[in-house]
Image (tube, rainbow, N blue to C red; front, side, top):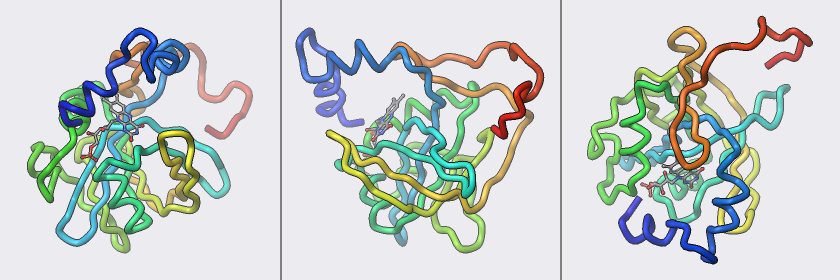
Length: 188
Ligand SMILES: Cc1cc2nc3c(=O)[nH]c(=O)nc-3n(C[C@H](O)[C@H](O)[C@H](O)COP(=O)(O)O)c2cc1C
């Protein structure tokens, strides 16, 4: 994120983002890196994600239209979603600063997982899980664009657990499991 944009996003009392800070920041979200590429231009941005359909599997990310990564996602209609682990906190911090170079992965020293056949979007090597997705819907939502995308390929990494989360404007770890797998039989 550029210094100017970071300053603009800083919630000042009564400022534009104060309601979001108060009402939305308690919502715990998984921290991901959105990756995209258009030819030699490669970019990535820290974001959060949720699933919005199970069959077919689809996810949603709210992207700022001014982000370079958003421009590449919209131009190509594809993106990678790298689910970060707690030991990748430094990646979340680096990708959260706006890049001016044409290859933000290289400029921010973010390790690249090359995409599978049929995709161009690079992802973050060493992530818990990586999803490669094609955009199905774009919906303008206030100051963001909600991008809904179908998951077409994925790479599962380490054993479950260890997810990096964001809540109360801080990074956090998942903590202990409180049940066995799907006691109510829900598929995810
Ligand atoms: C924890 C965290 C979560 C973020 N979530 C989002 C998000 O969901 N959508 C978004 O557009 N930007 C989000 N950002 C901001 C982008 O990562 C940031 O603006 C980045 O600099 C964009 O880079 P780019 O301009 O090189 O694409 C988040 C930043 C942090 C630190």
